[in-house]
Image 1 (tube, rainbow, N blue to C red):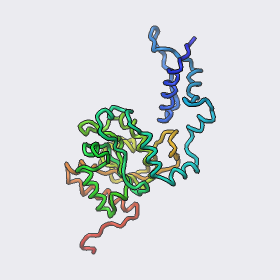
Image 2: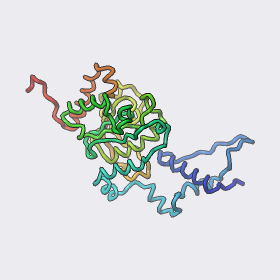
Image 3: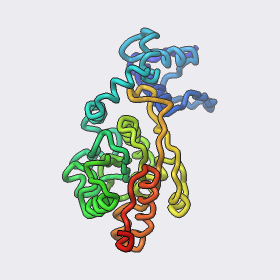
Length: 288
C-alpha cells in the first residue's frame, strides 16, 4: 500500500504539477522503478490526481478553475485600459527574482522601457554591463546604435517598447542558457501580451530562436514576417489565446558594432517593418 505524503511534500508535488501545466504539459507518465530502488515516499495515482486538483490557498474547486482559466473579455479590457499599471504588476511579480542562477551576479533587474502602447517592440537577448548598472535595456554602445536605428525609421526611442528575453546579465555577456530563457521568458511573454505591439523586431539569433522556437540560421530567419503568438501561463491575467502579432528578425546592434557591413542588411529589415506598418520611407536626396 502506498504511503501518503506529508503536507510539505504534497505542496511541493502540487507546485511542480502547476509549473508543468503553466508550461502546457498536462500528461505525466510513471516509469517503473527497479526493485530495491527508492526515491523517498511513494504516492498513489489517486492521491496524485487529488493533489493536482487542489489549490495551495484553498480547496474550492471553483476557485481552482477560475485561476486556471484565461481572462474573460471584461477582465482583459480592464487590464489593457491601463497598460502602465499592468506592466508594473508584472514587474512586481518578478520581485527580487532568484528563480535562476543569473540572479547571483546581477546588480539590477532590467525589466523593459518605452511606450506601453507602442506599435513596435524590440527584443534583445539580455542585459550587458551598462544595462546591469543602470537597470535599463540598451543604454551602452549597442543601445546608442539601436537609438540611431530607431531614429532612422523616423520615430523616437520613446515611441517603441524595448525588452530582453532574460532580465539579468549573463556572466561575461554570454548567451542565456535554455533554462534561463525558459524561466525568465514568461515575463517577456506577459509584457508582449500587455503592450500588444503590431510587430516585434527580434534583435539577434538568441532572441529570434527563443521567440520563434526555431533553430535556424539568421540567413533563413531574416527577410520574413512571421506570425507570433505569445505563450503565456494559464494563470497569467493578461492571457488571451486569440492574440497574435507579427515578428521580424534582424541583427543585434552589438553584432553590427563588430561587423558594420551588415548595417545595410539591417536597414532593409527595418524598412520591411516600416512598409508593413504603413510608415513613410525616407526619400533619397535625388527624390527630394
